[in-house]
Length: 222
Ligand SMILES: N[C@@H](CCC(=O)N[C@@H](CS)C(=O)NCC(=O)O)C(=O)O
Image 1 (cartoon, helix red, strand yellow):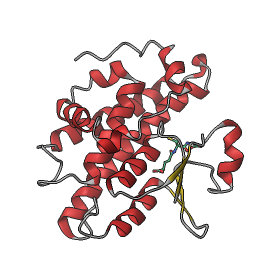
Image 2 (cartoon, helix red, strand yellow; image 1 turned 30 degrees about the horizontal axis):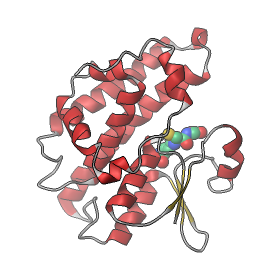
Image 3 (cartoon, protein in one colour; image 1 turned 90 degrees about the vertical axis):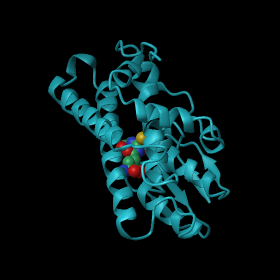
């Protein structure tokens, strides 16, 4: 299997962490969904987004949720991080839907700041995105009883929320410090040095340095 996309993308990273947790070997091509890599990526995914996962035989899966669904199948129902049936499955899927939505609005706000000149930033749109990010993570924080989101074991909800939180906190330290999500903060701190997370550390990238110029780069307070 070959995973396409940089670990700097939280969608790619949650797939990569899961590959490690399932002990599934893979090769990695750190393609960017922008610039010169876009042409190569478009051969794998018509809309040239990451992640993409090439399976043996040339089949290509796109979108992190579809890829994780396949990895769960490879891992089997006893090891799959998303339960295969019933209330437990619905619960994890609901948590993931909110987490993915909040992360997508975070990314939308980053793109607005990165791709448009500052004088063209649309304040109401950025504020609406920020509200969805804030409300989504606040809801997740309130749902987290610990040590895991559901029951006694780690699920894909824990993996993805930790990945998304680490991504957001690195991109917008001041904003994330202000969210006051102490339980999510603790979850991410607990997972960030585990082998699967340590093996998939985000590469340094340009969006962070550009955003730093907006004054949102103050270090996170403990
Ligand atoms: N729903 C998709 C979202 C993937 C996504 O937004 N990837 C970003 C990188 S973080 C991307 O490829 N952006 C380029 C673009 O949208 O053109 C998933 O879960 O895989």
